[in-house]
Length: 367
Image 1 (cartoon, rainbow, N blue to C red):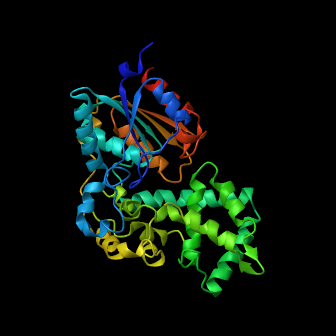
Image 2: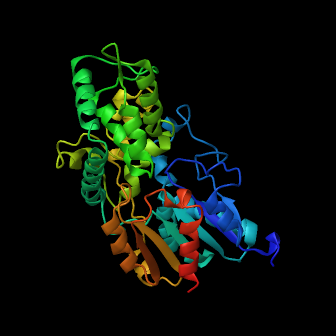
Image 3: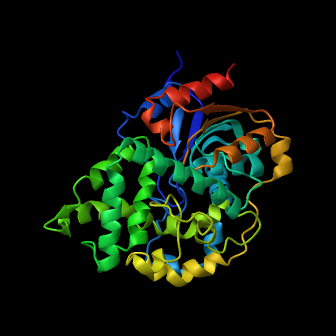
C-alpha cells in the first residue's frame, strides 16, 4: 500500500465563479474516495477565501480588471502552484460545475500540466454563446417547475397567493431588500439541487400569518436569496462564464422574454438585481459595464480536438445549471473524452453520491 506521500496530487476546482473551496471536515464521501488514491489540494480561486478575497470595499476599484477572474486566469494560477509544488510533475484535476469550465480551460491552455481530468456537472458548451446557453436552460427551468407542481400540486395556489400579495403592496425582507415578484421568483434556483423541490415546498407550506407574509417566511426567503449576493464576483461574472469572444449584454434578461409565464427563475443574473438587493447595489454601474465588455474566448477548440489528456465527464441528464445537449456536443469535440450521461443524479451528484460519482469516473478512466 502506498503511503500518503507516495500518492499523486489531485487538484479540486469547485463551483462558482467567486466561491472559495469547500471547508470540509473530512467526512464528505467524494473526498474520502479521492483520498484513497490521491493527495487533494482544495484551491481557493482568485478573489476568494484565503486568496485575497474581494468584497464590496475593494471590488469596485478593479473595474475591467475583473476580466482576469474567469476560468483562464484561474488555470494560470493553478499552473504556478503546480510548478511550485511539483516542478515538472503532472497532477490530476477534478472540476465540479464551474470547476468543470476551469478544467476544460486547463485542457485548452496548459494540458501539459495534467495527467488526467475528471468533470462532474460542468462540461461547458465550448462553441455556444450566452444566448444559446440560456435558450437551452430556460426550458429545463420550466420542466423543473412542472415537475415540482406535479409532486406538490397545492404549491401552485400558494405561489399565486404570494404573487398577488406582493403585487398589491411593498414587502421588505428583514435585511431591507424589497421582496418584488421577480425577487420571489429567484427561489426557483432551489429546484436545481437534489433536495431543492422539497425545500421549496416546505418554504411555501405556510407563508401567511394573520393575512400577512409571516416574519418566519420572510426570514427564510432572505436566507435562500443570499446565494446571489454573498459573493459579488459570482453576481458580476456569472454570465461572463458563458461569453465566447463577445458581449453578453444581459443575455439572461434578454432571452427570458422568449419564455414568458415562468413562476420561478433559475441560476440567472438580472440587471434589476443590482437595484433590488442592497448588497449588490454598490456594484450596479460595474455590472452594467461588464455586461457590455467584450470578453475574449475561453477555449482553444483546435487544441481540444487534438487533446491527449485522459478525460472522463459526468453529464447529468436533467441538470438545471449546465445545458445537457451542449455538454454532449463538447464531449464529442474533445478528443478522447469519455462521457457518462446519467439520470441517477442531479447537479450536486458529486456531493450527495457518497463517492459513487467519483468512483465511476475513475473507473471509466482506468478501463
